[in-house]
Length: 309
Ligand code: RIB
Ligand code: NA
Image (cartoon, rainbow, N blue to C red; front, side, top):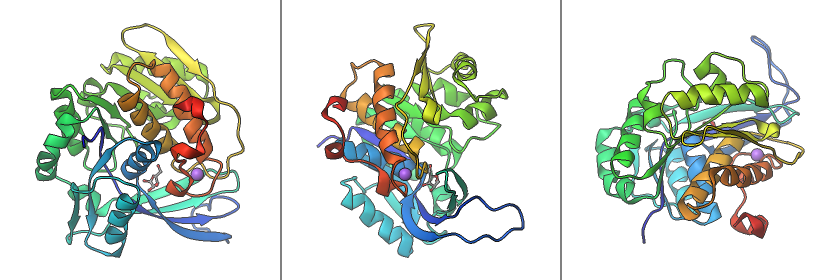
């Protein structure tokens, strides 16, 4: 069976503390709940796409340790193809320390570990899958040069690419724009990449235009409760896609749920306009923010209204 969505990216073990607020420097505060979950932007996006019903493969590296073994099982439990999941004894499985406050906002420190050891050989091994996929998805929690390489491989085979520049870096290689069919980021990443403030729809339109000029096929900037803006290179329009208000309990991974859903739509509904895909992906992500955790909050196809399919 063909693999339609390939994600080249990260796996992290999420160590999550829920607390009334985020601590300040030098401060200790009491939280009320701690749990361990499966995270990492790449894996989150892959799992969300898989849960909507598309054949997915993950290209990544975990440690030869307890967390790495568990992560491989997690992929299998979610029906993700794992032949390109490598294990190394040279570094530990990536970890993310996450604090979530009562408003559902978070602060995250990641130690990428084994993710940084994903190299050219592994990409080469995955090339047959990448070049036969419908959609390839990359982020920035592995070595940026590996993400760029994977995007180039996909482009060379006319595979659609989604690039999520997260977490954003100020000195992003300009080639990333040229190899992205869809360049998808949130407001803070757009701010860092353009150097201008992105706090509302108007500013997002402007930042989107700036990013689009750098050479991508289209740009999506996600704005949390304000929905998203979608810009396409062929049409000189910038469209705002609003989202119905929900009560957020934990927004961790909402952007990943959005991108995973977008990859699913691009693979399975390639004739649907990008704005409509963004509207539907927003609805999927809105479900995820209403439950605690990252992947634990990502909906399956059967949890969602039929009109999304
Ligand atoms: O986007 C959310 C993710 O960012 C978390 O799962 C954490 O692992 C970090 O990578
Ligand atoms: Na959530």
